[in-house]
Image (cartoon, rainbow, N blue to C red; front, side, top):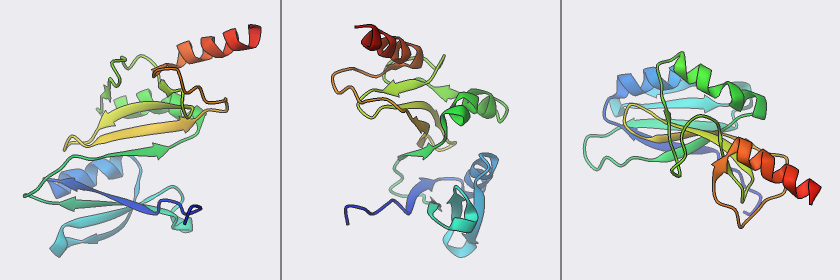
Length: 155
């Protein structure tokens, strides 16, 4: 089981139609809607590969906000602020850091932008960085990460 990959994840919404519109607006491909259950499934990545899926369920009771991350290339990550702004979606500060640039998770390492859907679910676009992890460093802006890597090479 160690080599398994995540196939699908599910989140909840209080407004099914609004949520479907939101995720279609992120260019996710709608795979199926089951109207009587108020659930929609979206393909993540290339729909022809049928590798990853997001389920969006309308619930009125026991609503709980969730988090998930969508992996993108580094070049795509740099386009996220404009992409989301064009859709009227604001970036969210995270780890006490503003949204002026991607936030790096040094332990991975990966760079991310965070935002929320209409129900307050936390979403993240994440790009894995081609660097060695640094377990002892806190989350930081990308420019600080790049500077720390330059300092490592000089030292």
